[in-house]
Length: 507
Image (cartoon, rainbow, N blue to C red; front, side):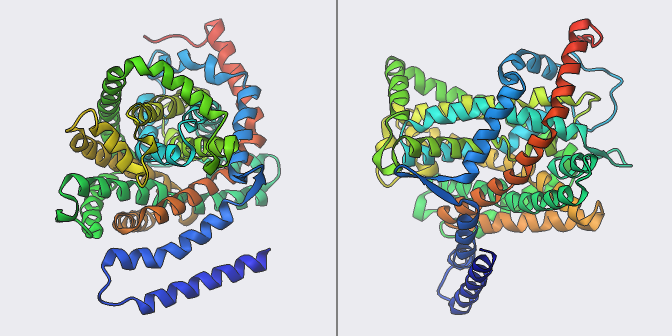
């Protein structure tokens, strides 16, 4: 198996070199970039999305890994995704914020918005359209189920992120799966194994930051921008690299200031864009309000019948879970990196706050997008997918909304990119040290990938995106299984002290 993978890598590299040598002056920069990257993207997908047959469908093992994990954590934590809901909102409002808590850099609200900025993005807009195109309306039902279950995974991983974080001498924080896997496994005497898993996660996280947290976002933002500025007549048509360069400069200005600078942007940008997007979605839903009950029944029926092209029920389920996982990233391990920076001495509080992410991201925003696409009847349109399908669905009711959507898409993409730059940076400094040179070198490379992502074709971007991000879940979920008892102890202790009055309200 190892030999086959090695030979496959060699063959891909050879093809890449040949493609580079054969590229001519007649090819655009965009075409040249895509030709170089596409073979490497295809190879990563084959390895990470290894699938096995179930009936007529092909099931990626990585999705089974995430789904089983989410089911286990939901049961093991006593359905914390439901019973911790109200307490989570109290924590966000600062009801239990102790003014003496000094460790950390962000408030609960800032940590939540910083993490949400990495998840509420084009996965909610373009990704939902992809799921419905491939799996039909029934994929919506499975996205909602995946979002509810993912709340438990997010609770566990973000609790661990705070519990095992590092507080640096300058007061900054470094946390995430790299730290709780290496430290937690070391407590059990598995030093080498834990370190190896942590390094693998860090490498995949860096790849994910360049892919889903960067290239996919800028790619879809660029395509929407070109559409609303004249299509082929647009100045930026076939000039994705130039559009990417402009955005890269703006991204660089924000991320140079670290997590506090990022949070100052996201705690204003995320709520604003959330309200605008959800309000527009609600308006369209109200226009079709008489059809909503029928559409919900249609979605549920489709979830258990499926389209033949998607491999029946299993195929529809796969599309729903795959897009939901890409959207809310529960179990992936990205969010704990942002949540680790919170100001608290109680790790469980941030786990409770974090469980709201999949609910807001998937159950609300993704469902809104899906309803707009299905209610307007455009879900069955051939030859249309991604951001174009979502844009046309909104335009069919609100003719001028594609312009607003293009702004929303750009801002969603921007907020996601700056959040993922932080995730990738912490993985990078875990590998290469917390130095200024290490910090600046990563940020420079990240901005370069903004340019590359704008110039690539959608298929290559999605494939590379999914491969790198989903690879992160293998070491992360394994770490969650091993360390789940620690989280259970923390949860029982916190709820007991809350009930006894030992933990008091400050508001």
